Image (cartoon, rainbow, N blue to C red):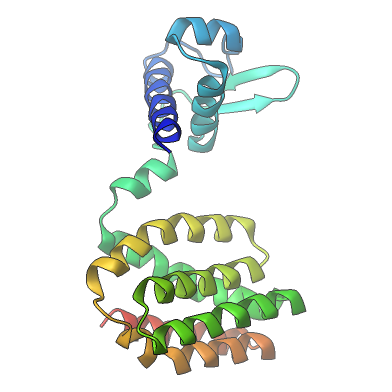
Length: 221
């Protein structure tokens, strides 16, 4: 586990240095970066670290990769922080606001695009949520609640919405652990979550949006 964390930190460091070089004009717009072996030598790191650092900057919009050709500067004047890094330093209020918007949208889209397999997944996590809430098992309840909403995000059939919600949920789990001492809020909102599933099964996008909004209202109180 320690090795993985160290490698990620090293990739972040390389990405930060390379980003500074790009923003400082060391590489021109649309210019091709040196090949991997040269970057490895320049930064004194291995191939996997370079690839991870490039991936971070691709996600931030600074680089683009053309398979079989190379890596090019996509943007060299706007500072864009990788979204994963931005989430890490966001406060919980900001994260919760993003969660609220996402949960209403994914509920709406899931009601339109869900499949039978999606419904089974949502039902499975909803049952696990209720079971954990009734047993006052906070950690299991939080996991089940987050998985319930992730399964709704997946049912939306929008990969960007799904990825965003998954990133937010990682940090929300920690927040939930810090603000809840028992599962009472989860028990109190179980009926609303069951209603949300019914709305999604019925294909009623408007009702799904409104029910998700009601859930948010109870959780945020």
